[in-house]
Length: 366
Ligand SMILES: *[C@@H]1O[C@H](CO)[C@@H](O)[C@H](O)[C@H]1NC(C)=O
Ligand SMILES: *[C@@H]1O[C@H](CO)[C@@H](O)[C@H](O)[C@H]1NC(C)=O
Ligand SMILES: *[C@@H]1O[C@H](CO)[C@@H](O)[C@H](O)[C@H]1NC(C)=O
Image (cartoon, rainbow, N blue to C red):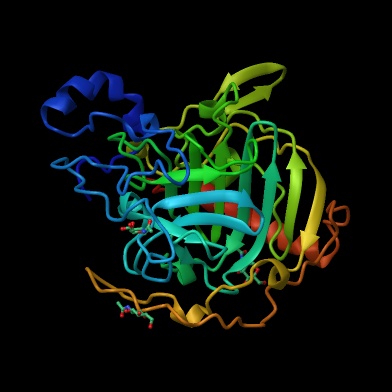
């Protein structure tokens, strides 16, 4: 791991260490979160990260993505979060290393052809909740992460446009959405947790008053339940409206508004957190069958299985066959009313357990 692949906690100390770091050539002239907003699509540079000679090397991929780059070899690092059936996740270009070690090199894997990216293989998604609130859009879900090159059992980590050295994870990664006004605009503040066969990805309205707070990036060790509290259920694909959550790390106890401080990794795994994040109400949820909304995805067999080094991914062009195995059974009630007794409740509980696994995992590196 490179010296700058430190915990996001380092970001808290950035102001103190900035001067020294600049002397050693660690920081870019312009942090990723201060680049743009780029006009879509004509204002996007080939590579957003043009910094050379810094410790983490150069941006692995590119940001101009089109039909030429589309396919399972794409190194596109321009991502989208538009809707339940049209979003991307950050995942590795090849199998073999833990997310925490390669957050800077993640690329876009999308649910829909047309963005010039890789496609999440058919059947990999097991349940997704898309939520739009006055302040952000968010997808939270369940995925077979091995189908997007994340190792079995990997607790994963957080991607965001900050990182200890301010070049972002992934370096040069940018995100667009058409959910704030209709046209594609760059979501300056966003975060995406990947791991434990779960994910959450939130893009904050750049025109909103608190985008950086809702898309806070410093709570990288406490996972989706605290950074994107949600009602997502495994086996259910739904699109909802919602109220906005509390800012990550901010909670109310006995009428007092308190701020959680994430302990440094040197103190070991996080075993207790003094609060449970409030799950904001969702409404107007519409359920879908996955086979009806995720069309045009390649079969899982074309996902890459390269194991090391610079091995080229397999050529994924051509196949659009979809498996028909039952990943789309949307069990359960929309409101979870019978959650303690029916099958959906069992599934929901196992989902919660998984998020706890994310919460208490030890290694979320920035
Ligand atoms: C398509 O994307 C590639 C890679 O970024 C770029 O080199 C090429 O100019 C793009 N083509 C068009 C027509 O924009
Ligand atoms: C979600 O459900 C699928 C199908 O039942 C199961 O294989 C998978 O392990 C579940 N995922 C999680 C994260 O619980
Ligand atoms: C991938 O397949 C396409 C379509 O057959 C072909 O045009 C392209 O050259 C192939 N790329 C590689 C790297 O083999």
